[in-house]
Image (cartoon, rainbow, N blue to C red; front, top):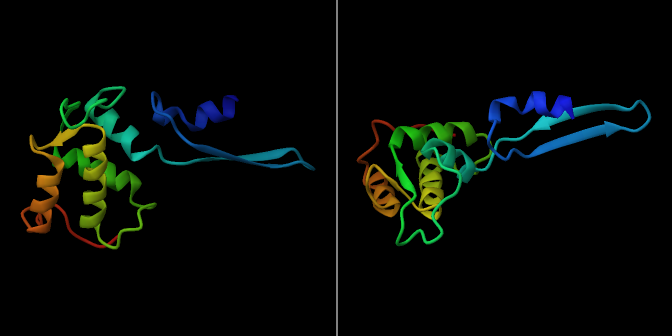
Length: 127
């Protein structure tokens, strides 16, 4: 158990999926630490433990676009999106589900602005 705690120390306070592969003959094992869920990373950025129960009426906090980009970078290896822009929009969709606003606006509005090219200077590139 100490080995698992040591490997997950960077993610203190977050639920982190881990995978342990064990060889029964040699009793050797290897620990693989997966990235936390997108929602967990966003909640950490907001400094809260839970999202809003009623996300359409009660907001849990406000994220900056930079925080969304940070979370996107942390998760970019697992996204199926072809462009970084689409991956950012996916993270913004998760922000909507936990009841967070982005840049003081409804996440759907930010996604529309991204589609319109308003944030092209900050969000660009392939995955």
